[in-house]
Length: 307
Image (cartoon, rainbow, N blue to C red):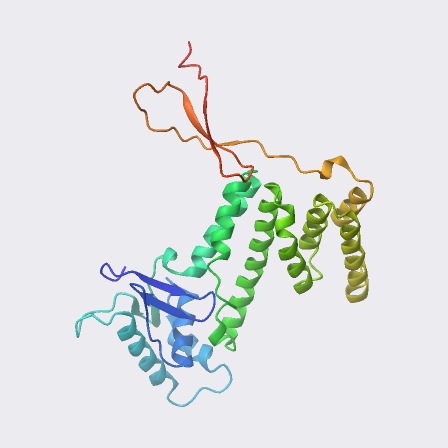
């Protein structure tokens, strides 16, 4: 987009735009808020009235409409500085009754995060821990701070930031689950301790911490984590732990063999290596998900190749 110019829109932190590796100057907070309001609704028409409400939800100034038009004009020059005078804008386009920001989904970090997190979750459901860890780690790495940090006081930004932060937490929990499936119990303990401290009412990271501690030979610490969680839930919400957390507690108490980690089965990707002289037919690539980063090439005896 943008005539061969690489443009990146960033919402996972302060609102930023980068053109070919150079950060774009976006102006003051209100002007950046206009861009953010358009970005969170990218591809959809945002009316001028909606933008006015986004910027001044309580008491808009008399010349609010004219001010929005100035902000849009400034943003157009910032986004497309090489656009000839009089030429139509290609990114921030007028479309009655307002404006639309045209950007590929992959150019907006928030959209890319959602895509990667969803693919990582799907890989986790498919018991492909190695791929899940790679995708989820990439998704988590897109964050630079709190979403929409520099326009966070705007109501539209608060709602979007809250939605993204919830997805961020789920992504972090999925990533830990992927790491646990690969046998990296000790490595995730510190991360889980921080997650539990920040979100003491969330049962999933607490359960993950119990499992990581138990598999690291720290049964007593795992039981202490459960006791702390039980106390907090009773004190804060007046409820007992959920059934799954209770079941895990009993399993830790009884040292249930089912809690022990077992290396996952190798995942067949279905990728056939390039044929070289001397190669036998029916060979497929198998990726070992043990976390050792090995690639095993095995010969699959296919019916066609060995009739």
